[in-house]
Image 1 (spheres, rainbow, N blue to C red):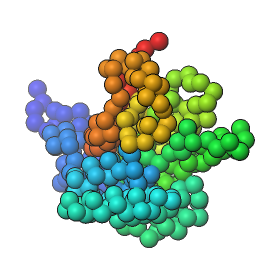
Image 2 (image 1 turned 180 degrees about the vertical axis):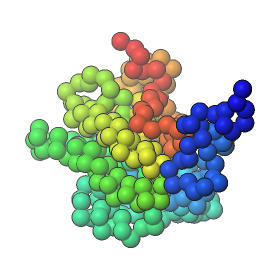
Image 3 (image 1 turned 30 degrees about the horizontal axis):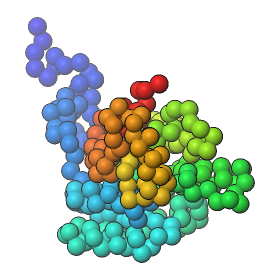
Length: 281
């Protein structure tokens, strides 16, 4: 009977990509602490001037990340978020950039420290359609912010992640990208469904470089702006359809984003956090 190291199958003795002789093998890696430390990592959160993005920024800063607070227009709000993080002893900087503008993304990402963690949270609010928007024009705007923007930011960050052989990308989708929706929500739902596919494609491309790409897909989140989208009666009606009978607190979703980023053996997956809503008829 063969015992010792030679008793293990070859795949258990195989070295991880980039490892030198004498470094840990796969079996030894299995005993490493599952949760990674993010202290000192550079994290960029898009659309972080308010709502869920601002809470995600605070959560990652509390983990020791140097956080870039991205916005396209809401500079004062974004600076306030960064200032609040700094008051709490964290590290945060404003990063103004329109993620739908390819030239801006290319030029302004080059001014940042290497991005280790990218959270694509920016979105165009489906309730903010202007009276003058044409059908095709509105759809194009939705795709630009919710799908093309994340595509451009991933392209700007992922090559550096691959070169350093470490990176974490989380795209924030929506339950609307998984279920049939009313016509008013179709452009939004289609953009989020596209984002889910983007996750899967980049996950396969980047996996060999120890870069994970996942999606967190929330249902209703009770942010400071929910009252701008729905009346009290509309909100109550929607909550009745959620099995847990409530919307999510932004911090619940933000912590799910953190846990997803820290799950080093998960990639290409969608984490659904919707109170059981998508299980209902």
